[in-house]
Length: 86
Ligand SMILES: [Zn+2]
Image 1 (cartoon, rainbow, N blue to C red):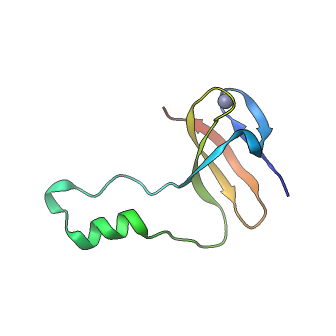
Image 2: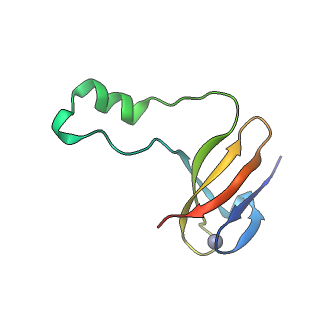
């Protein structure tokens, strides 16, 4: 089953033009207070909960931009507009 992703530059396109970059995890842990445990949590733990989540996507076969999308993995539908970030 395929679905579409809306690139902020190119518009709505087929999923197969994109590369999934994982869920948005926020900023890296502060280096001064970094411990092996909080680094391990940042690198390996995901929320993996049902419902909308903010995700990174790369438009591999298009403009070559990374951007975030709010998407519900249960329905594969976008729940908010995408944001160009890099
Ligand atoms: Zn694009």
